[in-house]
Length: 438
Image (cartoon, rainbow, N blue to C red; front, side, top):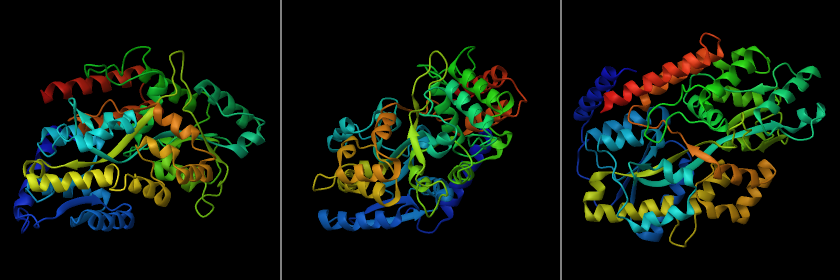
């Protein structure tokens, strides 16, 4: 989407906000006004009831489907609706801060103290220009997954540790006639694609931008170009990844891998529960996690992580009473409850499979039982989380750039552009948007 059209959308939201009856009405007296998307609604309602009981502070809770949530939230923020706390995606953080819709928590020691108990990528993903803007709702990362039954049939003793070994093992599986395309990657142009290609780039020891925020994605010999070359060869040279991967969105990829039709994939870690659930996947009980394979001579086991978090509005921060209530809410939901427990994070994991950013939970007995049941143990999950990195392209212009990114990566996979040309062009687009923002 071009900048002009984004301004048009914003103007439309302003007009819509002005036309909504009661949009700027006075806040419900003495309540925390919280808005989220329609996920884990039963768990959130249960925790709200516990919060109200433990603190005596009532909550006004509103939610929308995720597909409509961002528009609904922005419309309300533009219209000065009485929102105190909202769920925020890390991808929106810079844009929302620059628009004046989020307040930092730097002067709130009750919230800042959780930094030492939070995974590094989560802290980084809530930080913009050196200031933190909330506490996490959940945090997850891309994981490399494999089917133990397929590897056993092919006589492979252990999962691959490098992307070269992925190729070798895939070719062995193909040669044995077990399956035509052992590797499955969801490279469709949906919201997950940037996480997939970021994880791959990071595992090749690369980045999209440098410490100054300038593009290095097209650098010859860089991690992004190396990752793109590997993808191209996986499809066109080795033929271990189907050409149709560019049309496979994450949910369809999940279903295909769960059917047992592939040996290896990359998926969000939280998907491991559904993949090993007899009611949801044919290959249940056979899916395990391994560290992200290393790519090339500078390869690492790094992966891409992301978060969703509780953000505080400037209006709530500016009013002493609202601020006090909101801080209690954010701590109770994003930190520890009044009994000192990460009770909501544990409930979200056990009930719906969402991992959290809270490091102490790794030692919780019920959490250990959960990972043993669904993943064969939690050691790999914890180790991979420590190697997760935030998307380094999160910026005020991310929304414009990511569309170009999807097109560039797909053009490589389709053989319509060389990795060098596609990534160089993508880097040029990034630098143009960065200059325009200034």
